[in-house]
Image 1 (cartoon, one colour):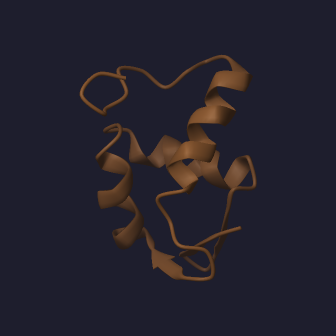
Image 2: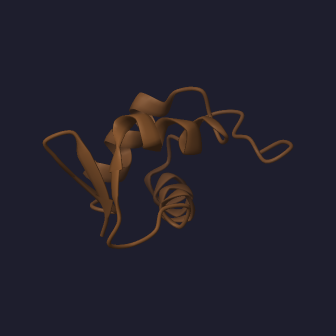
Length: 72
């Protein structure tokens, strides 16, 4: 990270998981977020918000249902 932003998304599974756990903390549990709400939060860390959203769901840190995201 440089100045609070990622230079690259880590390829190593452990590093990526640690990063995603940190990003998940930016979201309030038990609150619904639209994709439009999620993107501005994630773009603060990296421009590839689609990958970050997909990975947060893939690592089961967030749930996506009908376009609504929720931190687990």
